[in-house]
Image (tube, rainbow, N blue to C red; front, side):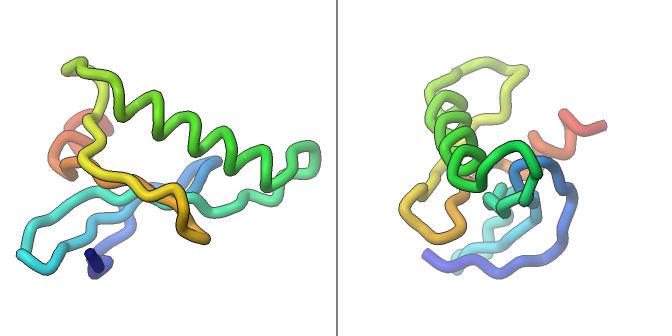
Length: 92
């Protein structure tokens, strides 16, 4: 499924978080890996850390952890989808 980016809401060591909309008009928060080019850590190591975080987070069922609804780690820029309302609530 393809998503249209509406707005960037955050950026960190693993990548970027943005509000996206799917073909059915539903809005999601998408976290996409963007290599940080850190001097002491390879991009491959950072990608492996990102993928591990997504796998672990997708298995957690806790009201204090944003639930991952879908993810694809096979893409050039792997990413995950979460409910954007939960992301904004936890950031506030």
